[in-house]
Image 1 (cartoon, rainbow, N blue to C red):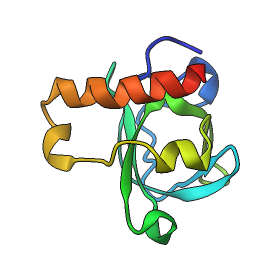
Image 2: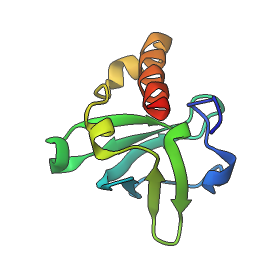
Image 3: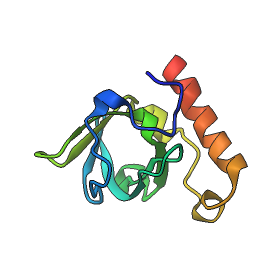
Image 4: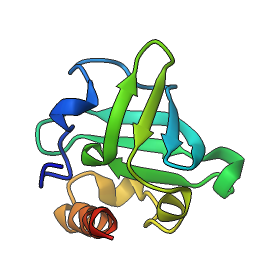
Length: 117
């Protein structure tokens, strides 16, 4: 895996410009929700996932570097994380998300540590 947690892996099969909103997101051990928002900006690519009733309506911010693969035919995104890793992640804060590099550092640090675990 690349060291850039905020960039899609070259092997993920993501094509820049693809609209991922509504795609289902699959952890290594099952479905976690669907994409509510996404960005493919260089060095700040991410998915915002609506976990629905699974974690009581929590939204999570997943850096693009956690994406293993994108299946356009099935409209599914596979991430290299377990449901528990996602459940235990910092909650998405839409106010801090824009322009707060410390928030992105916090989120990125959490997922970098999960990838090493």
